[in-house]
Image: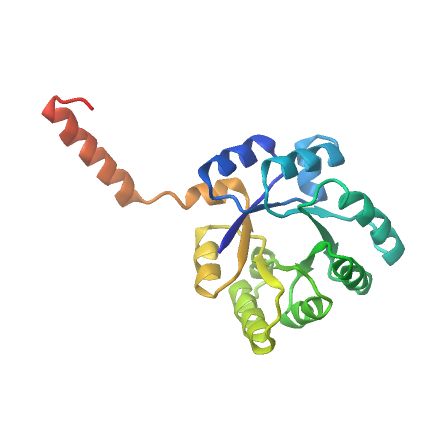
Length: 216
């Protein structure tokens, strides 16, 4: 499973890139606003750090507006994936862009039939929001399972990009279900390292090594 970082913070992206774990980055208007930087400038910098797909989102709601913005976004770098909402205009934009060779991430997916539409429109990625789905009493991971089944039934090439990841269990379940990608805030990715037995084992080894009086 590919790991994308859901952030626009350059320091966090560099740190993850240095680990070799970073396969891509997803951004959105809220993350850009939080960074406090110019949208084009920060997106270009992210694309230079991460060789994998970097999702940059349009904000227009109509087809013509989305296409105008997409033309600007895809000129930033070769690894830009234009992010569009799962609306009729968004799917029309997705079809036009993918036909022209541009990666497209269709976002704000909350049902399996929406994911089916995105795949038929040629989306590179579909982003179902599991955390937000859970928030309103639905089963976010059940949504991933349904999308995986549908995509496998018809051999769609669209990659399932699990978004709105809230904790490591979401990552585990996404991997078990065969999701292609997960995107999470850096703090969630760092939590994957942690286990009390790992920490206890390190402490025990260090204590025993100190007792030997040796050095490496």
